[in-house]
Image: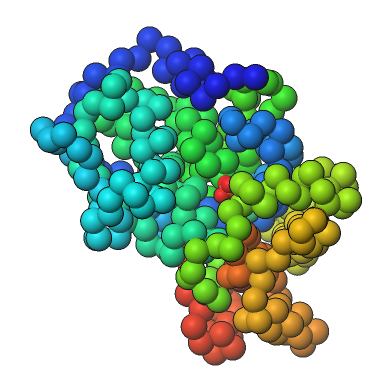
Length: 333
Ligand code: PMV
């Protein structure tokens, strides 16, 4: 078993943690998994049981600005509001940043703005931790590659290792105990017509963290033993569908994978459900639309919000059918 500190020392071998740049601003996109990560083989290093594959959300993500302070305490603003050391987010942020600072130096003024609701299953922790490692890379002048930053971001939150790139990213789960082979790999393909529709059922904090829920599922759900096989089949189908631009196969495999993840959680003890009445109604609506020959699919993460998958030519229909939907265009080309 390795500690986070050991892995950081490995990744940063030969690099200093002396401030090189006093001020900077970076951005990392959120990502939505089409094939999900659910369950860890190492809870300290966030090493997953299986691979996963995501699409980044372009302009939806986290802006991270920092400035070195000549003061005794760090200062943090989250979405424009100052938060103190008692705040959950503050604690999570600094327990991560302090893995990299010597004796808690330097003190920092941090401004982090998320363009998606925090902790509502819209993957804000992924873009958050990816933006933090990008910021530290500038602060300390490490000049690390995105792959190296992916290894570091994973230590903050598993799915963050996929938020270092735009477009499709596969997280190769790797087999090494030190996790040096468990990182995001961008896929060399674009799908300009692909659209993601965000349906916000609630922006409240999740009822149970994904970390906790994964552990309970892995330990108690009789269905969990089938999960690696499910992922292998869905991932293969998704990758082929992406290569062939076969939207039906992409939608079917992605939706099936999300349903399998939630079914596996429902079989846990205690049962875990992230859905609410709105989620259930939207799922029925999507299924009805498909019966009426409309190619729209959904995926759902650790929260009640639904993400619709569809192609550009259905833009107007989707807006009419789901008036509150926020439509993301993952590729700018
Ligand atoms: O990285 P975490 O701990 O926020 O877990 C993410 C879990 C899911 O969003 C449900 C799936 C995924 O692959 O992003």
